[in-house]
Image (tube, rainbow, N blue to C red; front, side, top):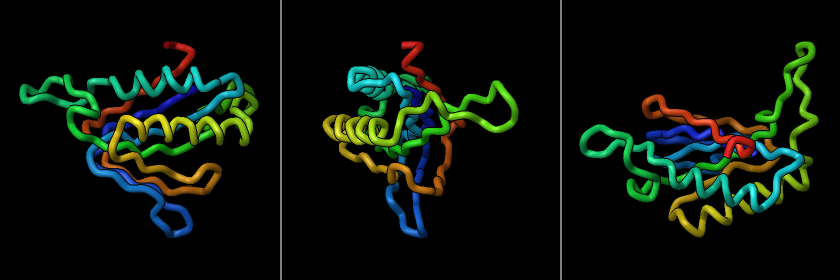
Length: 148
């Protein structure tokens, strides 16, 4: 599983001209699910993400987590995080989780985050979406379950 986490001042996602989700300060997270991922994998990733202390405190040190700053989450599925570009110029996605399994894990991640974070917005699984954000920093972190 891969999360691309961007600390944002604000972010939104839309599809077909309709806003699906919108947050102020918080994390905009692109979520990629591999064929090997499980709920246990998702639990580890969510715990790590929510514990990240990447917001600045009163001294300008990155010491505060999402909960401490009352931040929101915008969670967006993105199977292309498992693109394999080693051969040729056309990426392969054979390591991305299948739509049924990946969709279930995406919904599971959203549900688990909603248990801990008051504002959790989302994209639409499998949809063509447009994402807008103001990256604060910029500050971007890639979490890969293979490295946890």
